[in-house]
Length: 126
Image 1 (cartoon, rainbow, N blue to C red):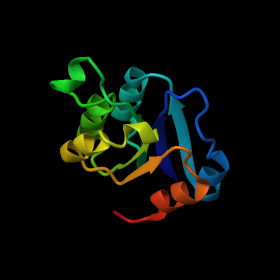
Image 2: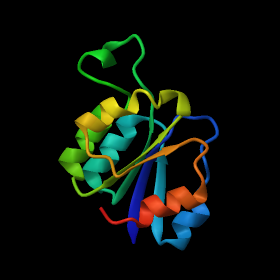
Image 3: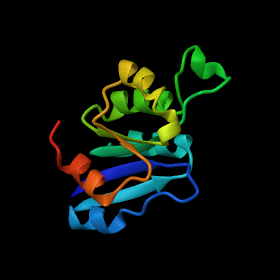
């Protein structure tokens, strides 16, 4: 069975649990990057779903572009085969390119994320 780890901070994330079950994917959602990073060291996932938030007015403009930088670096170390799927709010569209310059991302899906778009991201080979 394939595994998927999600780090979504939105209060109302899309619920794809039925889709994951249909595709034979065991999904686990994490409330903090720290807990996710611990889990990565024990069991690397096949997929990672994260929500992109550009770093406005903080250190992200320097060493980090967004909230996902450290997590994606951790994925590269412990789960280099994981397909990274990024959710983003349309208002972040002008900044997603900065993340894509730094890291290989399998798919970027804009809110509201449809089941069809998520299915395509999960089923498209790298």
